[in-house]
Length: 380
Image: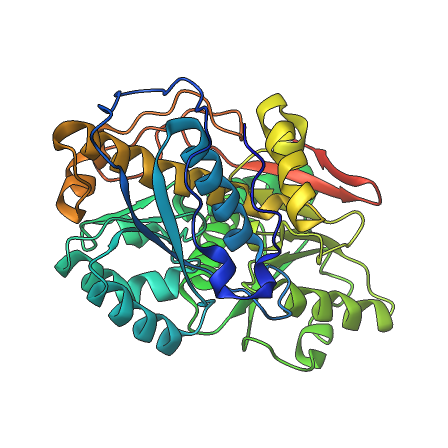
């Protein structure tokens, strides 16, 4: 494999242009493209970069590694178009307008969040663009309203009940306090999945609503009394969750903590906490370890949260490559047509990829890990 461009993403968006194939490409997997054909086109990535958020740049970096790896292995010339979008709806809408207008863009990795996905999805549908999210998990996104939306992770229809069941079965709860973000689709949907199971199991619970990026959490601290021994944090921002835990520690309160997949990041370094994730820890898998070494050689540090972004990019490029093999060109329509038939037998996460008719990941699962001082310990 040729050496990837060893340029840090944060040096600027210009560094994100994809690279051409090396002199010798490894044997292609899937359709073989005839020599006269040039398989190219741009893939937009909607993910945050250049800032200081807990997940900032992670998904963008993983997408870049996936694109360069795919180009090297298949002799293609796809490029990456970065769009700096996190959870802000207005940022997402503005980026979607530019993506739709750029006819070189043949597919999208993202958006990152369910709220932005819900906002921009109809625009992408109207433009015939496929958009594959590595982290938008709200269950309603695949109810048929967003025609071209796919995701490579389990939905909250699985995650919420998994967390609720874990609390009920494993933590001997006397009462659970559930902290949510007001008006945020991911947080509210995940919280509902948790509380539905708690109610079915007869576990007492209470819900506290907070704002994104809230400064102080005295309202949460006062709700943790002697009756509450479990704190559920289906929050979007890991830094918000850290502030909650810090406020409780300052008050001498230490309930068992259970969190959703958005907190499966190094910034949420709370030993003893339980976090769910829709993907296994790539560092524990052979193919994952190979890609991680490559990632670290470019970006310096590894963040498990971004692994599904690698897979999402791989999915879009696999569809694009199939479209190119069909008639020698890569168009939005061709990628859209090829998507339902995408099959990847092995990914860096150790699981295959294929999609249900509803565009959900076939065989999706949710894992629960315990945070330790040495990393993550798989619970089940």
